[in-house]
Each structure stands twice: as C-alpha cells, then as structure tokens.
Image (cartoon, rainbow over all chains, first blue to last red; front, side, top):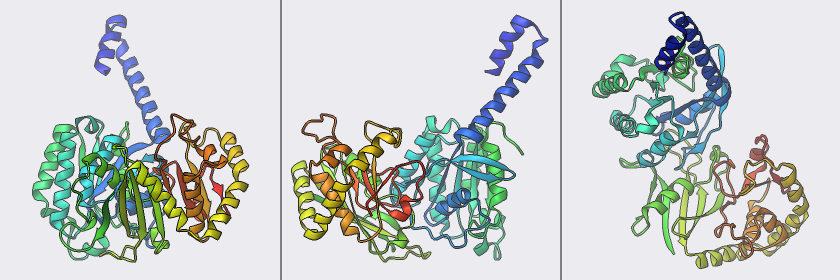
Length: 233
Length: 223
C-alpha cells in the first residue's frame, strides 16, 4: 500500500515527495495506533488447557492490581463468558484491551469455544497459558492452537504475536528454571518458531505467577506493545 | 422429550465440563447450541452454593431446550468451587408450553400471588424505563429485560414464569404476544438466575448485588 502510494506520488510530484510520503505514513500509523490503543481496544485472546489461570489473567488485567491472591474463580463453563473492552495499565501507558470472551480450557471446548473465539475476535495477539503440570495436556492444547492458526486463514490475518505464558512460577520456579521446563516442549517450540516466521508473527515465552503478581507485568508490557499497530520496545 | 446432561468430570483423561450422558439422536447443530448456551453466564458462582436456575431457549430445529442448572458442592483438583451441573430437556413446542405451566404450578400459590402483585406494580416503571433508556440495551427490536432481586429466589422464578406464560400487559411490554406479533420469538429465551446479563436471553434475572455493578444498562429492581 505504501509502495503504491509512494509510486503514485513520485510519478506526480517527483522524488522530492519521498519525505512527504514518510511523514504521511507515520501519521497514518500513529492515528491507527491511537484508534486501537485508546478507542477500540487491542483485540487479543487468552487460551490454554484447563486450570492454567486464563480467567485470573483477564481479571488481573481488568482490575489493574499488583496481585490477585484472594481471587477465587469458578471453572469457566461451556460457551465462556463475554468480556467487554476495558482499560488496563500496561507498562507506563493506559491501553484499552479487547479479549472478547473468557473461554474454558477443557478438551471439549477446543473445537467449539476456542475456534469460534478465534474467528470472532480475529486477534492481533494470542496469550497461551501453560503451567508445570501435565505436560502432555499442554502439548495437545498448544498443537491444537497451532493447527487452528494454520487452518483459519481469515482469523489468522491480523496475528502479530503469540505469547506462551508459563504460569504458577511460584510453584515450579524454585525447583526448575524456565528453560529446563520448556525443554520438554522442544518440538512444539520449534514448530511455533517456524510458523511464526512463515506467518509473520512474533513468538515469545515468559514465566509468571499471576496470583502473586510476579513476572506478569513485564510479559504483558512486551506482549501488548508488540501487537499494537506501532510496536514499541 | 430428550434429555442430556452437562457435568463436571473429576476423574479420567477428559476432566472438566463434558456431556455426561449419551448425545445420540441430537442434531450436531442443536448439540452445539446447547453446549454454548446451557450454562448461565457470569463469574462468582461459588458464592451461590446450591442455587438453581432455569434457562430456556429455542433451537434451530424448532424445538426448545430447557436447562435446569444447579450449583453443586463439588470442588475441583485446584480447589475451585462454583461448579455447575445442567439437566437439559429438549421439547417440542407443545411439550415446552406444558412444561412451563407445570413448573409454574409447582411453585407455592402465595409466592405466585405475590409475584403477580409485584409485577403489576412495575408495569409503568418498565414502560417508562423502556422509553427513557431507548438506546439501552442497544437494540430496540429485540431488547433484553433485566430483573434484579435479593431474597428467596422462588419469588423471582415465579415472576419470570408468569411473564413467559401469560399474556399480561407487562409481558407484552417485553414482547408483544406472538398471537399478534409475527416477529415475536416462539420460544422466548430467558434465565431465572445468571450472574451476568451479557449473552443471556431476552429476560434474565440477576442477584441485586450483581445488577448494581452493571453500568449503563437499566434493570428492574423487584424488591
């Protein structure tokens, strides 16, 4: 689009126009960024097998609190719960976020609730949550999500980032560093990296404990700044 | 009438919410709709132990799904409460009407009489609210009516069942009777207890403490 505009203006006004084009493009990107971050909300979704802390993460983002130690969610039922757009303090900036729905993580919900949410939200980012327990269950879920991204061409178009958030670090980090835990996901990580490169999104892995408020602020800052139209470091 | 259940499985490889009875003979589309819609919405069910909700909605097949939901005392492996169990009955239209009338007749006569009285006193409030808050909820064509209450939930069940089974002025303010309104829903979707109005049917009852947290959406306080 920029190239086309560049060529058109160059044809009409000559080479002097390149600076003008740069300025216009930057301004358009800034407006686009403003509209997403301050008005419409950045569309993202939270997925992961059951009991990994999806509901708690959304609540953490919504409540703008340091920790959620006393939060006591019920298992999310089939169909999930609608979550409206809300403002959240990400890094040093107030951003509007749009998770669309909070869905459950049971196997029965992958084909239904997850796929429908992906189609509906057309997210710019996916937060995929895992923990230290039942590696096979998390591998299955992660492979399902990668297949879903592959198959859902229309929904995948806006995807800019995929964050694996290894939650409950207060329970596993004292015994095992993150890289050792993630070694068990070697094939999945390799596949994710290849898919990210091919489809043009950024994949990253962070550890966190949402309830204790450890690591999650940094992970969210990096994630949301990478899915905004004008990514920031 | 056919019957399925959605329950929470705590053992085996497929833990969590599942269909816990055979689903043979139910069309895939109906099954999908039941899976998505059977449970009332919202978080915080652990604060409403043993509560019961009746949620009804139409299926594409023309049948009605009536879901009896109970908040169980189950606790999952990580200590989460608020686990619900749903008994879902799939009725033809005729069976469904009989089912609603039977449910209403099972309620104490005094409670139903009190509900009638209270609903009658709210007719004008509903009318005024409806026109004052004309843009909320967003659609005027199929608006949602939210009732709020704090107390014995049998009363609110009586209110909702009265509204969906009788063609009173109040019922017609919510939706003009299908007898004269070609656009009326033949199976009026409602929920007698939910913790969030979003994604619920046209008539939904919330605990007052939950309704008070709603911004910009009008509700009718039946206290």
